[in-house]
Length: 252
View (tube, rainbow, N blue to C red):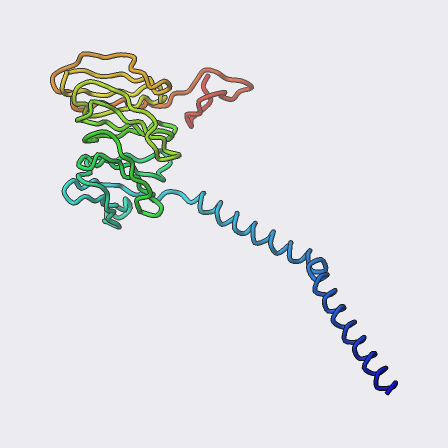
């Protein structure tokens, strides 16, 4: 009886010790293998960041975008082959398209649905739809790509869109029946033609305030503010240009 009891006691003690040992190993396993696991996690994160950076660095494809007013679509043209490579549904009666300077976003004025469709040019899909004024007919993007100016024909206004949030951040009242908008090369001013009252409205883009109204001819329909050609500067230090690089010899 004592032998059996002792045997059972020994067996129970051994099993208890084994269970405790197994539990101890399980508890210590994360610490024993923590360094390799953490290293693997870091490597995976670095791989994800690298993939994201490569995607962000991917250049916009060489495309042209055509607004089809009756089809309610935008045709995507490969500029290398002059072939249609995609068709993107947008709002009603799209009449104009403007592309950001980096080529990653295209803004489409949908005159019939009083909205702007935002197209991701890399994915060739609409990523946002922004309600603006009545009958948007023209769009201009600031040189820094931060804002889009949308002319609303029937609202006598210009909607300002923040391109980072895809939201309308301001509405500027202009003349009667505005038809087009152009941004100056430095981005300081926006010019808007008002076909209904023979005028041009000048908007300070920093403040969103109309700074002038210029009388022009009958039914002004379009405005342009072309960028002047680059010129060399006479500012030279240590034989090198200090501001504008025109790609030629050092200015003297």
